Length: 379
Image (cartoon, rainbow, N blue to C red; front, side, top):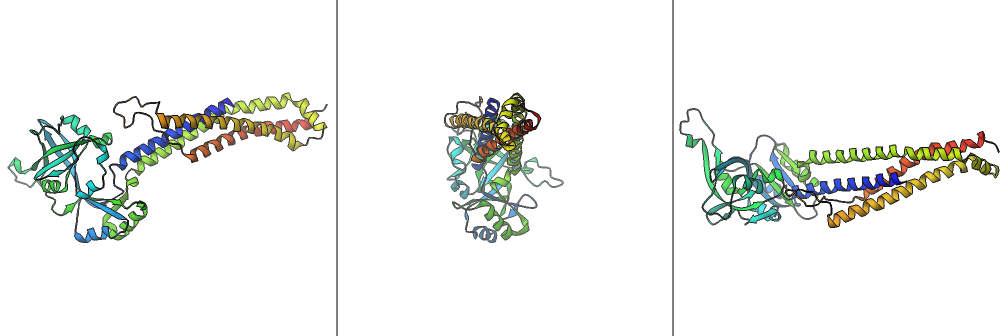
């Protein structure tokens, strides 16, 4: 019973941690990823026209449409340089409020008067020692031009413009170390994109179904565009986490099944030891089914008691961790100080069901051994 309880408790805690990590990733990427994104199926850009805009906005569930220009650039700041992902965004991106909650320093702005500003990832800031309060240094942004044969002037190989750092954001390590946000106008001018754009990032009205809306947009726009929901952008990651969770569930279940061999041998020895008692019950008129059910019920008592205690302890520890976070990550750079925990009722049901089933199967053979003693033992 103790082994069953400990196994159940451990399984509940581990599954709850997996749920918490999945929820943390979804909330983290949710601050950065749009609910729906539209990208060209061929190439990295497309012509953004009024006709395309009207098609997208004709869907009732569509709320805001952020127009995006995104590409790799080289940036320099005070004699330091590196390649980053420059993302030029329209005003609707700001109205979507996808970055405001991730700002850790400075101001949230992309332009003011005639000045262009940039929002810098914390990793980029650390690499280049960018100081938003220093007005004497700007970020120089270099983007390659279309290089033609016979070009002899090196300055024509690239376009360079300057932007002032306004604020620092922190979302997730990969994003923080690679992204720089600027206004759409700045990006279009730097890259000479004209009416070309690289993506449309859409936010929906409250309560709208992202998957259903994405299907409508895909049918409306045709085969020239890819239309993906925010979850589909990281589908492989979430699928891997679900497989990992399933493997952990099966592994713990196997461990509990091996531990249940003790229950099998205990009940078997009990059936052998109680031959005389079984014979007495038989003489008093106890049928085969009754003798068998006595041992089955004993196995089920062990199963229900162990599973119940394990569930109680596991849910209690998970709830305390969820509320107080007493088990910490132990890393200053972690997204959260404590391990995230989320209790899923389905996990509780599956855990309890699997534990009871395993213990019940371990009790079947001893029950039949005890019942067969009716025909092999005489008083």
